[in-house]
Length: 497
Ligand code: NAP
Image 1 (cartoon, protein in one colour):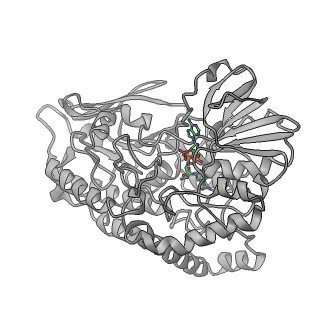
Image 2 (cartoon, rainbow, N blue to C red):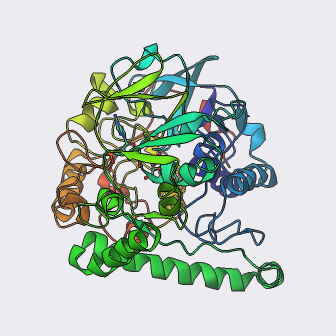
């Protein structure tokens, strides 16, 4: 055994896990990171305009508040820098094996270990903690001819900063959270911008503003003031959970505000109609922007709603046969969430594969453990996503659950832990029943849903309920076993006192 625990990823999940393990006195872990620096999705997404749509004071670790956020909604470079600094401050970098891409993880039931294969060789550990995130693998659309395109093409998650868009004919495919941030940034300098919209999103006015020097000084000198702001922001965001998960009808008022956001910025009635969503407010992620609609109303922009038939060497051809010439195509087409390739790497007991099990609708337990996968913990696993609040809150809930679990297992001298099948089945039954009442089940197509229309992405309730349910590791929901004969326990437990 090379280490007791392997954590995969250095985004909010992996770093937070590592920090909390250290604070709990558990030091025998390695972190595998496929890149050469930390930050996860906040390292990879560097497109112009990239920022978080969850308020800064809430979108940060509770144990590492940052009094220096420059805006109420942080721009990506600040979040990336925050993660880099936090990793240094809590001294977790020395655990990281940079440029180690996890290629396969297989549970060995005899040895009671996970056998990992990384791009730099094998590794054997007792526990595997996946912090690979949902928004880590870009989704590239399968458009006929896409490989024949001779211009420049890149995804928002791997922006080509060496390429100058000024004066070009540019096409952007997609109108999700990434696209609406990019478009206002590039529209003023490109010659022409075609925006390929399949489904118009709901876009609310933004409340982003600069954090004043006085506020920052206050947060620095009297840290409790920032905690109060965080608590208020948290509470206000939870109100959305009522609309999203219990009574979608109460969102009608918000939908009216979003509609007036179109009317305020777009005078052309045809364009207004094109941009008006036809699905329930909240069914897809609600977006925030004051600059998106004004950019679309500019004369060098065309919103193309006819479907894409194919891509040729120099153009996008729409279903009506019209060829739209283009120099650069930007894919703002999102991420592989329900088909996250990280799940396919995980092979559990008796030939199970997590991607297959999830496809079969087996789900997970509390988004953290899964039957058939002993000693595996997932951060941001199935049904932990949110439409209304901070993923960092969910991640910290899971981290506390895992740390508590590891402590309890140690206390009883356990070697393996696996959630009971009946517990997982009951849990998923409850979730899917609740899911039926949410706004995400009102008929829109979204990346929250799998091919069968089931939602294994989001948490269908208040986040405080999730926090409560993960507060203590419920050992009775698990099968726990001691080391098998012949497996020497001492070989892995030396360094976690
Ligand atoms: P997304 O929300 O999945 O949006 C992808 C867009 O591409 C959608 O408009 C989708 O249309 C379109 N699309 C996908 N495949 C297509 C195809 N083959 N042909 C035409 N259009 C296609 O992806 P994203 O904008 O990158 O955002 C993903 C998530 O990342 C967000 O929901 C959010 O959670 C997070 N994010 C957050 C921020 C922020 O904090 N501000 C910023 C960026 C991303 P349909 O709607 O019709 O499917």
